[in-house]
Length: 360
Image (cartoon, rainbow, N blue to C red; front, side, top):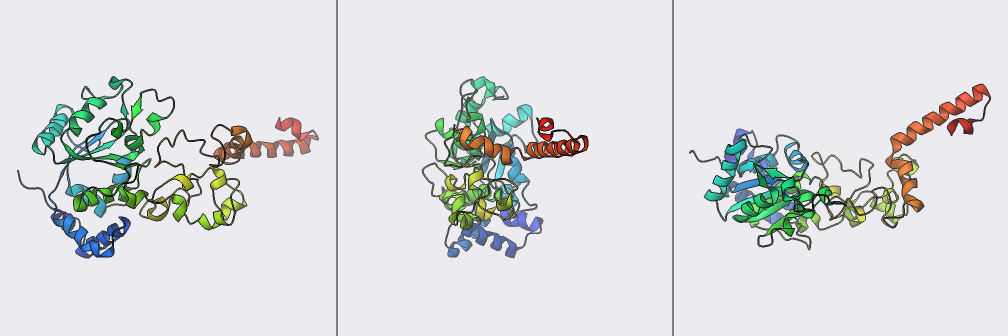
């Protein structure tokens, strides 16, 4: 079998210049919170590192993490870095199926035992392991079997990192995170629903260059999850001035005021969304006018309604929740109701009847 091409050969084949690659390495160095002088070392490591075997397992997930990575601005150097590893098994991207697919996983484990990188997206059902199976193997058994020979594990997405949406109450499958099952391997949590593409590729680049990055108390790389979205949000000055949007289409919303009162979880959510953004740095949810849902944090789905401010208790919908939902979360329904009310008033004026009776 011919040796697989190294990263410089892949770059040349895809028309990526040396200058473009060095520019990317400089950006990646900055993104990983490393000093600028480390950029040449990052470039050298990516160019010369032996292509590690990567086994990617997908369990209880929506494929959003893979979609986020592969549907980033294309072609990308991020893509080439993932091409520069030997992606030996991936449910979505592999050409093989059936027995051939499982044979590829088993062969990769055999050939690279103790050296391959295991990437997992999706939570693992332990309440009923047979709920989710691949090739007749439960997710639980496949994870344990594959993790045994891994050098390290990257839990991609909030489902793998913290249980995610499958873990939300009432958690019918008994979904748990990878770290609740595997306790004897280094685990890097890269949460997000889904994570930002450059964060995923950046974690891999750091692993190839320097090994396991510095992690916070939740196992997340500090370079990408060291500060809250609120700390870097461009709407922060409005928060400091006490200027808040009260609805999704009021004057404050149109002026770009803080979305705290509409349920923004930015003050308690650690991620680089506000600085790295999405779609090649185009935007992120708050910039698009929607409050942060806190998807990089544990139990984000259960931590109160999305459209209530953090200062309101999770169960207290009477004081604020319903008002907020009526004002913004169901804006389309509210708009339709207003349109019907307007028609009712017009009809009332025409027929000389009480408009309030028609609205009811």
